[in-house]
Length: 126
Image (tube, rainbow, N blue to C red; front, side):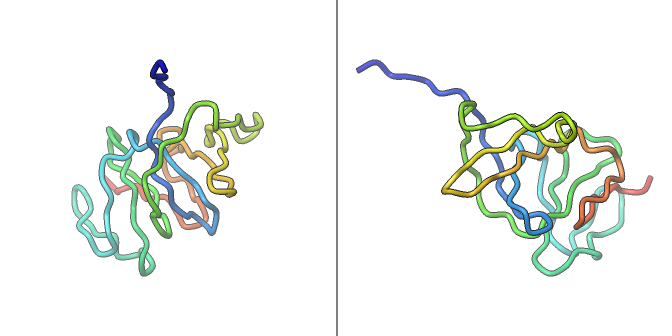
């Protein structure tokens, strides 16, 4: 039987504002814990217990999004992702169903600096 190669991407799955979401793992540079030193000074002290900050790869100044709980890294096939309506397409790449749950695919790169996503986005002051 010939081997078939499925295209897709690894995603980091997490909760944000009580909603199951994911981001392309390639967009995340590193993850900060509560109280960790932030790039160029400061600390992630304003995070609630258990929150983490997903830091965007290649952003200048460094920025990221505070999330409630990181679940795992999963592989989503291209076929499993459904497009979003135009109104929210600038921030959400699409939605996928995994284990009977809808996962919204968030684009960290397309978030405007200083965006307030219920739990809050972080932008390091320069």
